[in-house]
Length: 502
Ligand code: HEM
Image 1 (tube, helix red, strand yellow):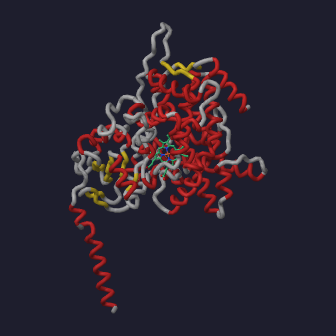
Image 2 (cartoon, rainbow, N blue to C red):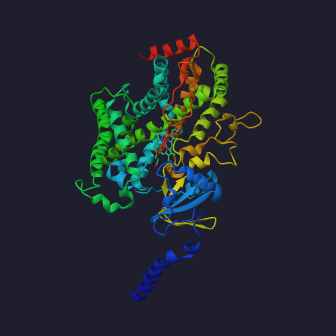
Image 3 (cartoon, rainbow, N blue to C red):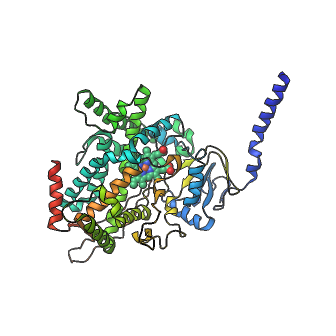
């Protein structure tokens, strides 16, 4: 008996040893740029910023899925929505992990759902996210969205040139009020400042040498090149504050009966253990990370496009005037009645996708796709930028044109640009909230204001040819535009909405 068990164990061991030499390992990797260097692989093909540009060039050359390697790290890039649906959605049991990024982990961002590996903690987080932000639940936050968007209208009326700050404030205010019931101060809000400072440091971590050579993490601070230890220490402290301070404020208010009902109070009430509380804290802090920097980008893009394209703006305003009239602001009930504004929102999400390469996934097992070998432990990038420029779907993709979303019979087509929010089990849980925020911003701003190019002292239009930043979430670089109320009645609507809130 013992010897039979021994044989079985031996066979299993041999099979395990043989696995890397299985038929899969003889399959080719997906096509991609030839490796230039045995050791470095495709390192020289990749810029430090805007990797979506070479990815999209490779997509034109090699197709829906491409492969490259940098040092020992293998990556696949998924360039079409169809391939992404097959791999990220249908084979989500393989494609739902995230790679650990040593620097962000050391800096204390390991609590964030966004960067967390696929494990039980992440599953618990997602359950809370689902409870909080599924489509139906997200409607609860509409009064907050209306209040904060109205605040933005008022600020735009008073100091239109400061529109970048007003947009940023709007997004942060919606998330902070939704999650913590906290009304963000117009400037230097303590909680926002902590979060922004901490998040600002993430970009310094992305391409850090420690990520490629993790042993460097032990380099002492006093040695040349060891300065990053200070960054780690300071960011870790900011992360601790970001997680605890707003949460403690909510708990304190709950205890003394002054708390406003919000996501944190709701989730705290559903906690039955310290472990739950720990998760809920992290979910709340992650909501800020995921929500504040992203919606802002779409609203900025909307202003950018409107300032450049008066005809499109006029078309949307005609629809708003027809459906809403002139004596009230648009509401969410108007949304299904305004297909052109819906198409405008889609085009904003498509034309400048907020996160052009999303947040990379990581494979948990080997896979075979259309005869190609996808290795275990590979970074799997959704090339959202490339998808938004897929020539088989979008003619003249660089042109901002909402009419591309209409069928010949005048109805909206079924392309809702869902890919802008990622895929599979990792799909953005805040997508309904985000879509509602951006839609309401578009509809109310166009109801009340005309956005146009600014004129210089000679009366000449100042051209807007600004580029976008790089980074995980992209933003237009600063530009100027003129934002003026459409009419006296529009002005009165804004003032009435502001007075109602006071
Ligand atoms: C226009 C606004 C937004 C865009 C374009 C956007 C886009 C994305 C994308 C592309 C991902 C990666 C998905 C993937 O890995 O496949 C993501 C993840 C995530 N987003 Fe959003 N997002 C937006 C707003 C929000 C908001 C408002 C929240 C919070 C309420 C949020 C919370 C998250 C979280 C927690 C994740 C991580 C999910 C996970 O790893 O399991 N996002 N988002």
